[in-house]
Image (tube, rainbow over the protein chains, first blue to last red):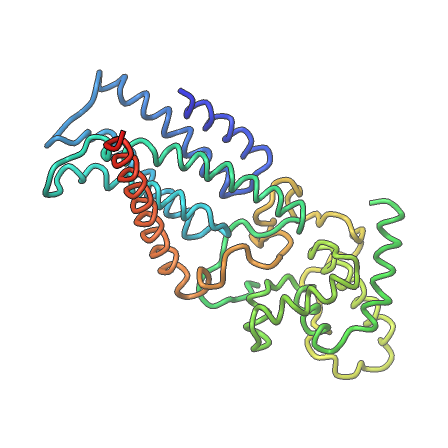
Length: 152
Length: 179
């Protein structure tokens, strides 16, 4: 609940004061919360297959792909940290299949902390963006790639 | 922008007349909406060298936003061309490249009408980003291998967070056993 509230407040702040990457990432987090609630409502619980919650797996996989895309193309550093945290959330699904005893607290940390970490990092990123824009003026939101060319 | 803004742009003219050839080269391309990376590619120099020349000019002009500097230099070039209309100008090289679609009557030192509002940031109406500035990300994350380096960074970050969390958990377990 606190994470959902924090994400919603961040989303509003990102739309107000952020640029493209901030808005996309904050919007993603709010959408994930909404989709997560809808999934449990629609599935009347969870859809489990081979010991894996398939709904959560799909949500986390899509979120990782989206965050990685922002991390690859944004003129920012912090989205890479968010994508890294999301990668941890993804690997948590396969932690149970590793040889050796499964420690539930390790699984819980891998499954839940990434989202909280992402909210924290997004807040920091938004603050840095605001400070940077105040210091330098407007600057690029997205990076170009490959050899530069001046389009006509 | 009020009269104070226009006065400030006239002060730029005095500074523009005292620029070095290298600074003129760079400003001429900025006036044509080239990014720092494109200028570096065009002039065969490093992007940091481009930014150094830009910052040297910005430092003398009171650090205006890059877009404002571009517009002021575009207007200054237009006046220079007009003043030299009778006799061909000496070789000024790239500094005399005609501005691309330079508006005839656009208030100087005011937001470019083709650009979105300042609060939005991002790309302008021609798909070019607003007000180029030194890149936020380290150079290793840009260019041809930027994508691969960023992907590697994501994996390294994930591994690093796991290591730190694992170490923290071990410490907590150890302390719990002590108690």
